[in-house]
Structures are given as structure tokens and as C-alpha cells.
Image (cartoon, rainbow, N blue to C red; front, side):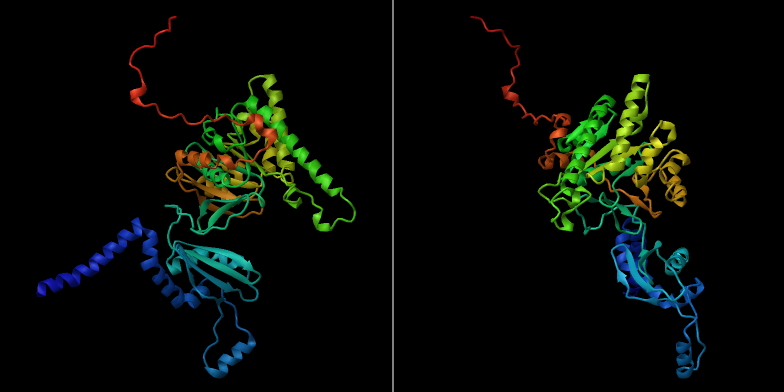
Length: 460
């Protein structure tokens, strides 16, 4: 009996330690909820003051507070750390708000994020400014990008689609109303196509016209043809489609100008400068143009092709410059996008506010995507490993950037979603000639109905 008790006393802790080690590696979310979260909370509460002091985030107390401390406790007056709010556990980490002391700024806390990570034993610490004088620390307990699981509750709206997971555990939402046009770069097998699938299937359930230009014979966008309002699979077809989109944009501008020229007694709120200010009954449907492998539009072999290329690039630039107000948005994808593609490439890239850079083959490609908006993100994008497809760096013209990873979505599932939502494709008369014909699935023929003999001609 004593041997059994000894075995239980020794085996129980060993089994618990082994189970915790296995859960930490195989199921990090479970380990965080059961072990990591309590430990991090204890570390944070026990060492908050000393950690802030070591990080240089404390300030001298006010004279009134110093006098009160000396009068009541007769002890030494110590520097004061930022006031801490309530701890809010999440499925991936922990959130806490800090009220900064006078003279501090969010950059001071962000500069110490790596020290805070080690002090509190978490995977990462991200700092976000909430309002003047208040920042939020988002502690991430494990690497959420290793096994992507999108949050259950994500706010979405028209033209706002959650497509990836950020490294702080929040969803990356592609919002075309906020960032009208975007450039997506990535080498072969980097996850660029997966990003495009998630984005396209997310928009498929919304009343949005989807237009595709895929000059690789449609190998990327053809499976989504049932939901696309127009699809061009050859440069010659793209040369015919782009002028139609430009004319559609011009017609929408005429509609806006007609609305601006209404009677003088019309209330100010009914006067608009874009399609979103029009009444819902008069507002044309939004159009999102996907250009896969944009370099195929720039490459030419003859002088005749060069003239056609210049026309297409000019039309793309016009859509990028003027399309937002008309409700036309661009999603341009490619492996490399620089001045060496030809005239107009740099001007087109300057109009693409959003940037997503997957793994690329050289540092220059990363600079083309992020160098003009977030230079420090170039080195992060250049260090993406081939073993992590779907991992990317996203940034915009504000200078902010973060790492994201797209969840896996098979081509078959994406195509099935587009087939189910095919009836939601809006009717845009100008795009009707470019819509792909998708025949109905043929019914399987019963084996008993198939004759094994060759047909004979009828004789009269």
C-alpha cells in the first residue's frame, strides 16, 4: 500500500508536468487558459511597480502626494508608475489599460515592450493608443500565427471583410471604404493566392460586383467565375474590359454631378461628392476589380502590344485615381511590382494605399511594397520563412504595419462558396458581355442506360 501511495505521489506531479508540456506545444490555447494565464497574472501583479521602474516608465510623484506619504507613513517616496486598469483575459492573451503620467507618451511604453514581454513571461506585448493619455497593453500568451484561428466575433460591414489574423490576436479586416485600393505582393507558394481566396469569398456574400483580370489563362480566378460579374483571362480581353470599367466610372460621375445640380432648396445633407451620398435607390453597386499577376499586363513582345499596354496602364491609373468616389476599388496582385515593368508602374503603385507583402525572393521586392510607407517593415517581410505560407506584413500610408497570417481555405471550398452565392451577383449591364458562361452541372448517366453496341444508322 505504501508503494502505491509513493507511486501516486511521484507519478501525479510528473504526469501533470508532462501534460502541461505537451499542451504547451500541441495545444497552446489550452495551455494558456489553464496554466499560462494564471502565471502571467501573478507575475504582472507582483512585479508591476518594479518592472515599470526598471523600464524607465515611472515619474516623480507630485508634491502633494509626496507630502501625504511622508506625513502618513514616514517612508521614502518612490517614483510612481502609470496607473493600471483592470486585467481583461482573452482567449489568446491579456489586456490592460494604462493611464500615462504627465510627460509620458505611447512611444515610451512601446519602446519597452520587449522588456515587458520577458518580465511577465508572455509571447509578445503590443501597445495601442486608446485616447490621449491612455494606452492599452495587449499581452499575447502564445504564437497565434502558428495555427491560425480567426476570432469568433468579428464586426463586418459592406466592403469590410475579415481575411487574416494579426499577431496580436485581432482580426485583420480589409475595409475598402477606409483603404480603397491595395497592392498584394508575394512569391510563388507564399500564400498570396490564399489571401485572395479569403478576400473574394468574403465579398461573395455581399451585394458587390466582382470583376477579375487573370492573364494566366484564368487559373487563379476561373474557379470563382459563377460569382464574378466579369472575367478577362487574356491581355486582349483585359484591353476590352478596362475601357468599359472607365466608362462605367464616368457614368457614375455624371450621376453624382446630376445630383449636385439639383434645386437650390435641397437640404445640404443630400448634396454629395461620391456614390455613398446618393440615396440608396439611386446608388450603383460597388465594384471590386481583382488583377492577378499584374506584370502580365505590362509585359510586351511587339510594338503593337506596347501601345495596348500603355492604354491598359493608363486606364488602371485612372481607375486608381478616380475610382473611389465612383465606388470602384482595386486589388492588384503580383510577384514583383517596380519601375522595371514599364511606364506607369510607379504611378500606379503610388495610388495603391494598402500594402500586403508575403514572402518575396529578394529584398528589393519588399522595398517596392513597403519601403515608401514603412521602411522598418521591409526587414520583417524579408525574413518570412518558406515554412510559413500565408504569413505577410500589412501596412498603409499612415506608416503603421503589423504581421498577419491568412487561414487555410482550399480551392474547392472557395469555389463552392462562389457557386452558392452566384445568385447574389449584381446585374451590371455594362459588364454583361464579359461574364463567363458557367454551364449547369450535367446529371450523371445511369450505367444501365449506356448501350454497349455501336449506334446504327436508321434505314427507311
